[in-house]
Figure (cartoon, one colour):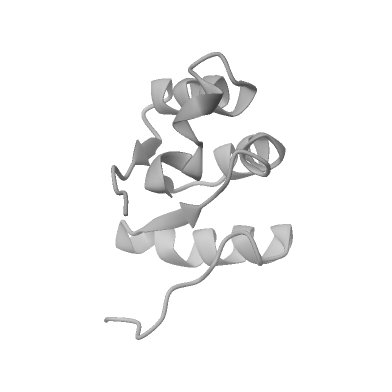
Length: 92
């Protein structure tokens, strides 16, 4: 089954994210999440609790000039260490 459009995890209510994750878990699907350095910290804990793998698109949209010590980048590295998260390396 192929969906014509993607779901934006940022715009979903937390309960909706959990519902969608529960429905796709049996299919081995993942959620792709397009974040920014501003919302990644806020949502990291919540999306870490989902029972599916999560792909963080555009390297979390963390501007390189913020450096590797920026809290959002540190959070992204911690997420990757769990094995539940993947990062899509994409750029303009």
